[in-house]
Figure 1 (cartoon, rainbow, N blue to C red):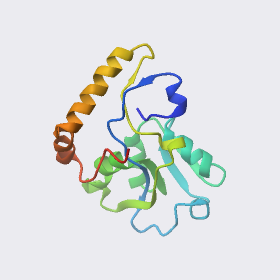
Figure 2: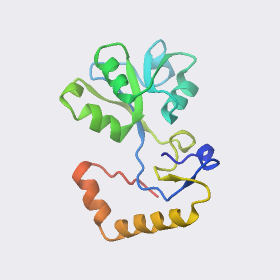
Figure 3: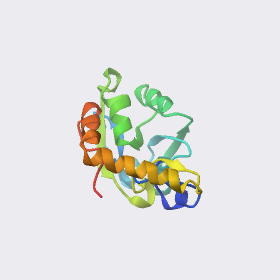
Figure 4: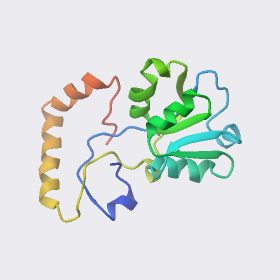
Length: 168
């Protein structure tokens, strides 16, 4: 789960184990910008109830149509079938689930990566019950150990061609 200030009030997070930005994806042929002027009148697909939903609603809800879905796979299908102009989500998931597959051949990342911590959070971590401090400490030690002994980098390199940990 992405670490955000609001979520910290409800759950205890371990230390982050990865951090990737959010990105927009649209057809390669799309010529509009990922800003208020470019997205005016466009339809943006997001998974409902996510940080991505909050971001596009706050930034573009007054000028674009926000179409919310129960699952990200539904977003990809509507994007491929021309029912959406653009989607917004985790860059790693967009790459792995769409762009790196044959059905994503006509799509690409558009605009700049979004790293605003107020929306995107401080990273992704395990979310535990607030009282699970001992368990959080055990997970934190495990994360520290695999980062320091090279195991983390070895596993990440197997699945990603970019740094999924991000800056501190």
